[in-house]
Length: 168
Image 1: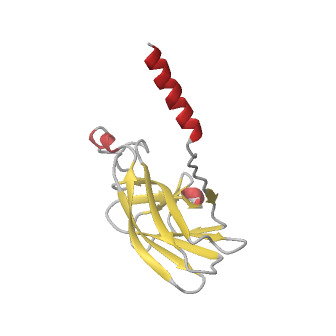
Image 2: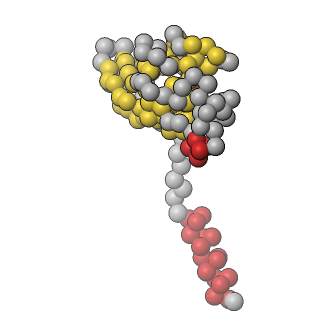
Image 3: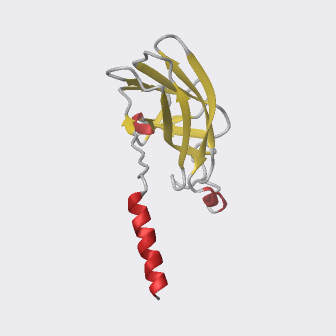
């Protein structure tokens, strides 16, 4: 029994003596939002060719060089669709110096198992989906614009706070 107490004491001491690793990130919310999606219950649905949503982020000083854009959306397979479906968006990140890049972003549904229960109209149950992308910014950038466009097949719904930038 003494060995057990000694071991526990040793582990606790080591935990306090080792350097603590910490992660701190700041959240940046959009300064502007624009879309031509169909507005339904406070969400803008991107569900046909030409539909887009655009978020503008401004930094008072130079933007950090590395950041993550995290999307929180709704996804379904059709108008009045079912639960558990992923969707895809064509995401273009533009910088004030004219540089930009485009990526296909998968929005993974939070409840894929509900597809078997609510394959038809689910009244919004099981629509929540998420996606995240990491990117670097060019030097001396203060404004970043993120544009998401309908990519076909499944529908995505967004709103102003659907995209958050996390910076270190």
